[in-house]
Image (cartoon, rainbow, N blue to C red; front, side, top):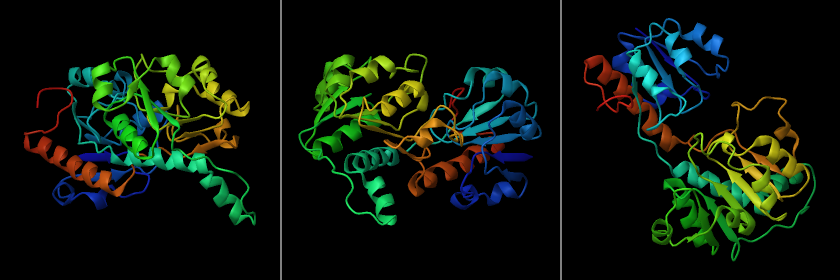
Length: 318
């Protein structure tokens, strides 16, 4: 049996889980780089019986699944993965299993990005190392409006911290009810009001056909020129071309982005040259605590499959 562990950029997957039992009768191959091209992915994975995917870094549509005749088990970290065609996998006899998905890391990173933006921490660090001193004046958060686009598990936690900073928290999403907003002590506003009133607007939605491109030219045009946009959710929710224009023209004060249309971010991407954009390499869930959940449960998924008693099945009945 051959097992492929994909997108292990840090090379730590074998350290975080006890693979001893599996290693006794399987060959494990670690891929520390992203395989972005479908033809290359198909070629690399031809002989593998089990593939471990890290979140949604590598898409597995029906076309790729059909081209992998040896594949019997696809394990993803996290409890959902919209980059995997679950129905096609089931039709092809490929079991898909997942893991639990801690959310704390993304919440904390969101606030790290917000604080770095409004106080220019990242630019002051670079300036200080170059011999400069106090180049920018920051802003305080107390009394400002925090707009939360998507008040789910992560959005609600982000909102709670915003209130601790003394911010007025407003929220909108297509399915957000007044009752839900009230239970979180958050003011429900319209989509237009969310973009008009927010001093800091943070995105916490699932990526779907409905949310793809939801934050585009028209929405960004509603924002104040002193406002900041944060996206730690999924890249395609915010239209990149529109965001680039808004940042370059200073129609918004700045943005912080942890997620991108194409990952890893291409070396020649325009984002890399924008001075009022703070970038991080999709690291919301890249924490010791998350990996301590992910990889031990990946091992459990594979061992359960080999025993004939699979666990955490995503494309069938548990």
